Image: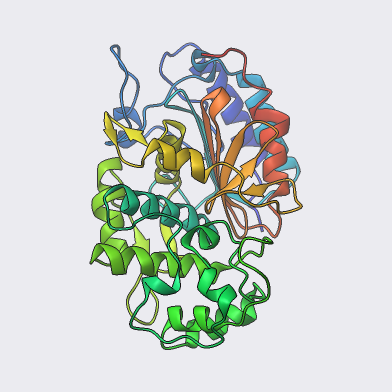
Length: 370
């Protein structure tokens, strides 16, 4: 159950908000975010642009063109709707303008990302292609595993490419859900299990969400780069962004699970979103190719839902936005037009109330283009 804000604490929050309006460089305080050495050290200073590699800087919402009253209303809505939000981070123009943590969580707490993990794996595929480990997305999947013999192989399975895995249009017969997760978990070789599945459709013909496809992508990165996916991720992605508080669950062969299992902090989730907001550039270095960021966040599959699907990213045409989405309300939502990254971690059966908070409060809070 969500721990409700008591009247005294909420009054403290409101008073702090009023006081903070007179103190340059303070973030919008929230229910249990208090000044700490790490937060104080990250306060903005005069000078040019910065990158949050060593830590995020914080700023008043109004200093970044956002209405603090609208954000106050959002926090009130979280309380009134009894939403089980564990953390919320809002970044605009590279500064945290609002942040919330439900006790006992704080900015140092790891969160299970569930299927947000898929978007990180997509980034690793793009990096592997850029570095020449992979020829490209058109390579047939079965050719990536020459030492395997797979069951139910036919012309359709032979035609399945890396792009089909990325866009969840593999054509594999895969009833996504806990029963097949359990079968996958207990199998001796996860790649074998996934690619042994029979075909249900022509590759590319229909969207079918398949966490097994994401794990095959993890295996492809590992087999072609010559290092475990988690090692490749550390060297090529996490270390440059200053992400070190990481735990990644592995399969029966010690390989990072591609469909879920990554655990990082909410602030580090925001770093990943900020990397994509900046077209794959981080502090002057092209971490993920810009063309890969664009391809990944462009719809490649019509899901029949509000969100369509790119390369392991969900796309939101309404605002030209895109999101990494995980079970129980894990969300990295990027809105390039407004230079905003929103991160939620939660324990909810439906993430639509979180998207509604973005629609009803966060985007309306934008007051200027800067």
